[in-house]
Length: 312
Image (cartoon, rainbow, N blue to C red):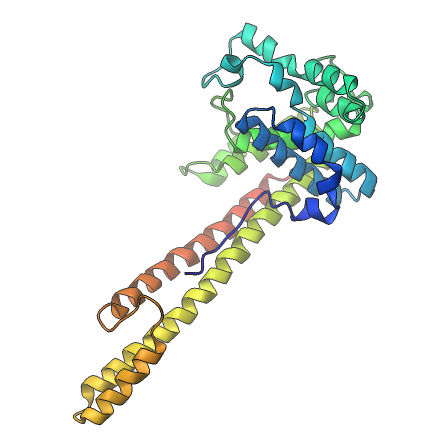
């Protein structure tokens, strides 16, 4: 059966820059990370690539930023597992250890000529424009542009994927009003948090605006995938309704020859797994699936409206 498929972190954009060969060595380095951090790093790289596209960056910088996104958390291979994978909130002492992944990652990159160009992405992706970040409390233009992009992508994916050491996060009154009593979508929470940080002068507002575009693109892509499945369902329903109509005509006929004619037409329309005994049930299941998918499309369009209202 046809199934709708969507991947919010599709590698299509990365392949368009022929990064496979360029990043083979860097990807081998990622294998040393735990699975969660490795997947997070891949997500951040993809987001960086797509943000750079919207920023109209040069291809060379886009590649540089994408690889920087892959390697930004490489220092976590030196963080004790019991801290890295702790399910609850870190203690102050544990958080100080966690923060060292920036300098550890920088040191690792600087010792390897192939990684050295991306060392500042590892070092500075937790710096804040207002000087409240770490490890050095850099401000504004002192923070490399690549690190400013990686920070936005990093924080967004960390919130969306509910990184282990993240606990409850607050949402603004604006978002609370938009979602009413509904459970907030992780994307809404992430974008709301980032919008608040932008207003507080911590992250780059231009970069954040491009992230909003990327998230809307993802939602539109999901809608298109569901729409493709809706079209498939409609085709199947139309075919099964024709079978049902043939059955009705056969039932209403007094001539065996006519009955056989319509029954043969039904057989020709049956697909694998369908028969006289179950086609009506399959038709009902398709109709139910269509209602569900059309409801999903309506909800996704509503989500886009919420995202647009949260924009900076």
